[in-house]
Amino acid sequence: MKIVLMADMRKYDLLINFCIAYKQILQRQNLYSMFNTSHLISEATKLEINTMTTYSEANIEQLAARVNYNEIDAIVYLRDQDAPNYSQPNPLLRACDKQNVPYATNLAMAELLILAIDRGDLDWRELVK
Image (cartoon, rainbow, N blue to C red; front, side):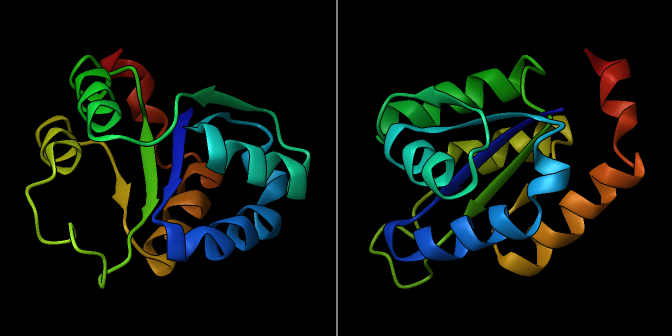
């Protein structure tokens, strides 16, 4: 599965700890992340992560396009509800809703998503490619 790992700045430590806790599952997946986040996760976990350029609104649009073409199977984006852009329209979330791509925005959903991937609950994603 192709999984994107992202976090708002104040959630980086939470994402890193999530990746440490679920390293055994994540290491069997194709992981993608923004440059800074990718570096932090790799340093802490030794996971192999495909790095994208640094975070920007253009990258969100690119990810949304990749979701629309079924090139991404799941997204873990730990969002900071206190961030100034939290309530702004999110094209990535809209694309995930449209294409039925799981999108976890908090730790509880991220854990459920990763455990579901491990059980094979999302293997149907291979059929839509």
